[in-house]
Structure formats: C-alpha cells, structure tokens
Image 1 (cartoon, rainbow, N blue to C red):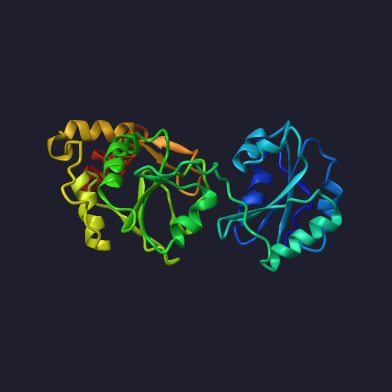
Image 2: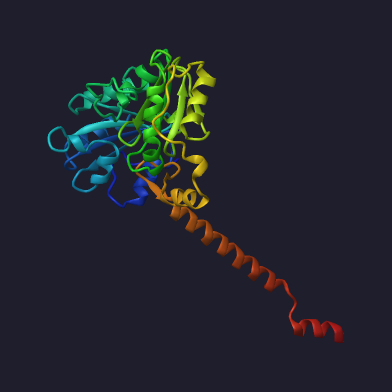
Length: 324
C-alpha cells in the first residue's frame, strides 16, 4: 500500500499533492494552516504517525496558497491566529476546527475527539441578523439546524447565490410569499448558500434550490415546479395545509405566461450553474454550457462522417473485385 507523506506540503498548483489530499473521500483530511513551514508542523507530523492509516495529514502556507485559506474560510485567522488545524470529513461534508493552540497534546486530543464523535462541526456562517422579523426569515449556517431542520414548523427555504439571475428574479416573488402566509403556519426563509455551509445531504448544486422542511429533522422535499407566485403558494398550501391570509393579493404580476421563448433562452444563457463536485464559487454560465453542447455535437458529427467515409470501399477496390 502506498504510504502518504505525513505533513504533506500542499503547494499552489501542485496537482500530485492535491490528488493525494482529495482523491479518497473516505479518508478525513487533517489540515494545518500556517504562515510558514515551522509553526505547528512538528505536532502535525508527530500525531500523524499514529493515525496515518485512516487520515491524511497536510499543511498550507498562507503566502503560497491564499486560495486554499479562502476555500476553507481560514483567511480571517491569517493576521492573528495562525497556526490553525481543521479536519475535513469529505464523506459527511463536515469540517471541524480546533479552538486550542496547536501542540502535540492538543492535536492528539482533537483527532481522538473527532474519531469518537465528541466534537462539534465547524460551519461557515454569516452573523444572524439582529432583526429577523421580516416576511422572509434569514437563515445562516449557525441557525440552520435549530430554525429549519429541527424547528418543529414547516419551513420553505430558498438556497440562493447573490450573483444568480434566477434568484434575483425570484426575490420579489419570494417576499410576497412570505407576506402571504402566517408564520405560525409556515415560515418562508432564505439562505445565502455561498456564504453559509449547508449539509452535504441537501445536495444543493444549482440556484435557487427550493426546499420544504417539516421541521422534524427529516430531509426536505425539493420543489421543482413553476416559480410564479401562484405556483409557489399552491404548493405550500397543498403540502402543509396552510392557507394564505384572508384577502391577500400579491403586489406583483405573473410573468410566466407572457414570457417569450426568446426571453427564456436569454435567461438560461445568463444563469450561472454550479459545477458538480465543486464548491459554490465554481460556476459556469448557461451560454458556456450551450457552446459546449454545440461543440460536442460538431465533434460527434465530424467523427461520424469520417467513420462513414473510411468504411466506403474505394473505386479502385470495387473495380478490382469486378475484374476478378
């Protein structure tokens, strides 16, 4: 069995090191984030010797690979709190941040706590708003479990991205939906999925992703219907039994019936789609996807033509057969 180096230095652009770190999601990663290659490294290597069979121990240096610090939300510690240790459990989609100063004993205790499941996951999270009494409740990473997953209430949650064109179009409709229902019956909520960690089990890959939670800890039903007000309101009522406030009329007009095919195509071209198996910051436009489809169809057509031509018997070969 190939033995991975303990305390692997993951340099920017080092594809071999990145492959070692990310190729096997069954092995949790123990990452040291440091300003140089000395602070905390001895502790990382010492602890790694007794856990190398089922964990990968590696480190990043801030001056070399700032993008890695940003990806793991470690950039806020660069100026004052390095070194830091973070365990990434890719199989479960969870991360764990060590709060203590890095030493061999503290790191050993942290790794053992991870294996014993006695430490809490670390979530990338915005600050919860001081006033959250608006029609649409704002959810952040730290409040997701209490206010959505285990809220004991119906919650219709929009996972959005600030740059998403579809999300911007949905925003006023979502606000009206929040005004239409009593919060005692169903909570209309939203979360910026680019700034807050959500569980891997939710499988949020595109924006917006609309999910209806029962609030009992179970996984949500993902909504895939129309995004006009009536579509959404009818869905909420049919699933939860909640009815709109008496006499409520949305202050927006339905747009779906009047939207032309050309406008739908333009909206698709402008929409950003998240790449599979990548973070929310890795996206491509609908225009790029369309161009790739056209290119692949062109390549397939050319390949088919070449294959057909290569199978046609040449004129000389045909004539030779006739003479024989």
